[in-house]
Length: 79
Image (cartoon, rainbow, N blue to C red; front, side, top):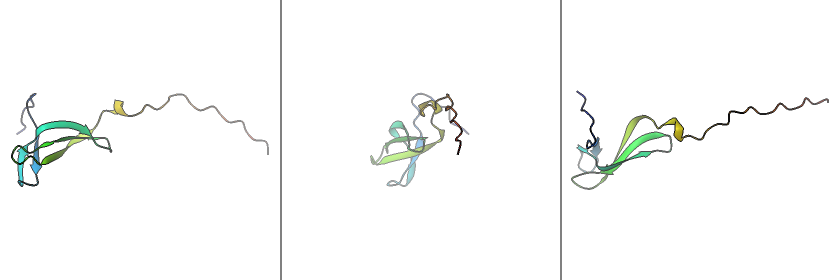
């Protein structure tokens, strides 16, 4: 059963120090080097940093645009 998402819902992650699943406190959504989204926050019990990788890639608009103009043709060499 899926949990409905609301504005105050924080995702659940695994705390390696407490060895339990807990809600991530003060979570901030980040984009990793490979373009995937993740949430970084703290454990509510011990304060250890928690990190959860989210599904899907980040928006394509964040990537650098590719120029749409074709390169000019090079003249044929006569050798």
